[in-house]
Image (cartoon, rainbow, N blue to C red; front, side, top):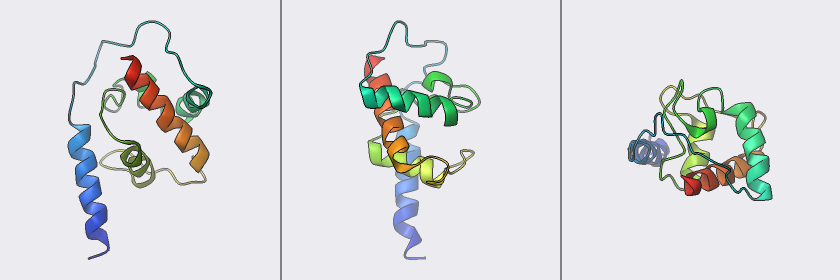
Length: 113
């Protein structure tokens, strides 16, 4: 139980931070988004693994994620552990480099909004 306490605390913090901010429903980012090379690769990985539920980071089957002020380590934690209805993604499903690029894409998308 003591080993799980830090994970539960991180999960709670991630959920609390994810609830902050607007849902950004019906207000998509308009115009081109300047992406770095890593951001552009991250967009491709995002479209393969995340777009089904978070179309372009907006709400869809899942909440919007392009307006959440989550730090990179909590995004990675959310992807690896899952939380609520979100499934977890193993390193075989999204390799660590692809996950880093997805995080870069989300940060650049958020900065454009």
